[in-house]
Image (cartoon, rainbow, N blue to C red):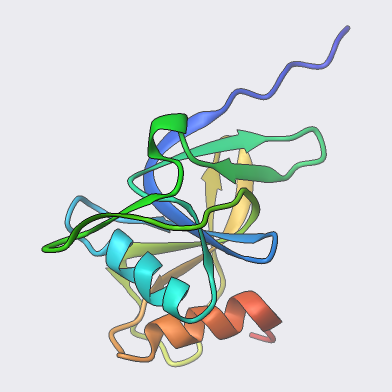
Length: 145
């Protein structure tokens, strides 16, 4: 029997990458996905996609992130407009949700599933350092717990 071709999923999300390591940013409309992506880009990330992210599972259990063609290289900055920026594709390594706030100092690990791929999930932290925390996480990984 032939292997089933993985089906891409179109997410209402933003995504950035540090090198080839991708971060999916989930949240309700107006939650700040584009703003967080812009802050991460100021810290060295590259835009993958803003507003819509194509998440395509591969046969090795990974999830490739890309932008729909009409949105490639564009990010919305409220009050400024659409900005053209460098963009790339990436493999998802982390997901952050802006719809849930983390209250624990050293939280348990959380997971989410996108297109049948399980990924580690980070909840929003109410701190001005949150973008820097995500940057450090993306560049260094997470230790215990």
